[in-house]
Amino acid sequence: MLVLVLFFSCRKPPEPTDDGPVEAEVRLPDLPDSLFGYSALSFPDSWLNDSALQLFGSSGANIEISDAGATLGRVLFYDPLLSADGTVSCSSCHLQAHGFGDNTAHSIGLTGEPSLRNAMPLANMRYQRRLFWDARTVGLENQVLEPIEHPDEMGMQLSDLPDQLAALPYYGGLFHEAFGDSVITADRVATALGQFIRCIRVHTSRYDEGLNTEFANFTDTELEGRALFFNGVTRCNQCHSGLNFFSTQAFINGLEVDYAAAGDAGIGALTGYADDDGRFRTVSLRNVGMTAPYMHDGRFETLRDVVDFYSDSIAWHPYLDERLTVTGVDGDGQEPYQLALSPSEREALVDFLLTLNDMVIQDAWWLSDPF
Image 1: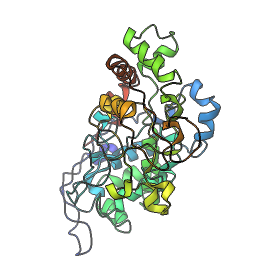
Image 2 (image 1 turned 45 degrees about the horizontal axis):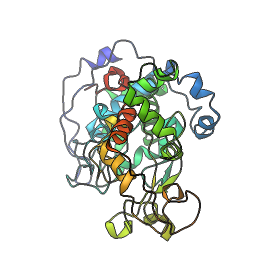
Image 3 (image 1 turned 30 degrees about the horizontal axis):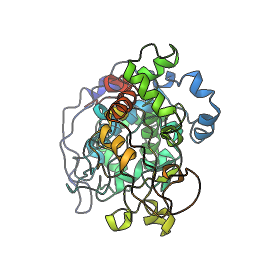
């Protein structure tokens, strides 16, 4: 099938209707003769046997990943022809070089206008149930279609998507390999994208190496930063916990006194509840050194900026998360916790966080742009 694709010269899809997708130049994906073994990828036993991660990963953990399905997902992920004007792909806001996050503070779609938020990085999605900064969507297969049809992101009518893809010379064979026939549906697009994204796995960092060597591979400052992260005083690991350095909860972290007035109320914009004003999902710190800028709106350019904020600048909020308050326990309206870390402690924390970078996904050809 892949050999036959090479006999097609680049061409344009059919002329669009007034309401349909626009005309755009077609490029053919350059795929290997033998499929990469996506189905053989696995998390380490320490992850698979971890009771907390098992609980977090119970949603979608048993979804089958096939080599052909993830290959199709890879092509779909990088193909701008999934957008209404043929210029924006999933990878436009989820860049491999940046841990599949966006290095632009406010992600930009086909309108060319900055959005309210920075696109969240994609890694270890097996362990995420609720998605987007405001946790509005449950399940990866539901999530992947939303940016495709969002008018400010990729702007494609899902009803037009099957015909758009069927008009391209390479998708019929790819869908046949993945699903047993060449029928193209939005649900199959979502399934293939979900399979590929679940293959973006991060568990081979220097930190992971250190778990097996009693951190003999760490420098003195990295060891100091690790001690600070886990010492209970900084409370870092109370929100970014476990092997995945994350939480499934959404927190109010004191960036603003009034998030809605500042322009983005997070979950509060959906619920209308005062105690949800500024409540956003907590990201994993895996690959955090690659995924700048930081926070939902990309306001912090560096990890040092983030550490400085949590050390000195948490704003009072009537519903600030208790872990960021003086007492560290329930009680609305408390004063923010001030760490007042020394300059060397701040740098040590940054150095430790950089050990969570997994360079494998930056270099992995099987996760890269096939066009």
